[in-house]
Image 1 (cartoon, rainbow, N blue to C red):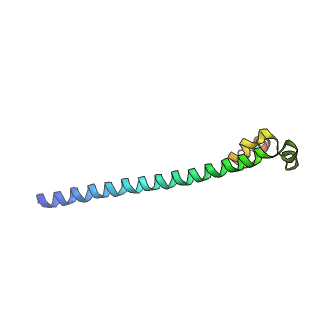
Image 2: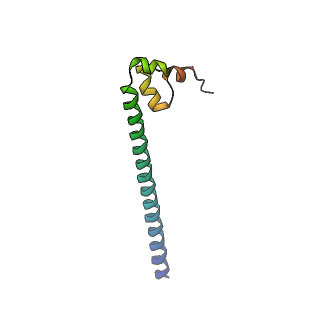
Image 3: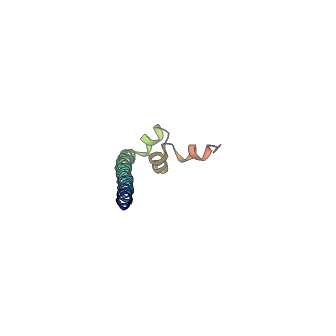
Length: 85
């Protein structure tokens, strides 16, 4: 009977370890994905920042819109006009 308890305890610990490793793996994958998204946003912000004010106006943006475009994908004026529901 004692051997059965030991096997059960080992199985439970192994399950916990597998779950922890799965969570760690998922966390690392999310971190990698977020890192890539941040790099892409930074690239877009750099490209938009390199444009002149006239070029930004031609595409309907101002320099102040760059952060909201790179974070939300829309100028802040569009975001302010959106209804939450």
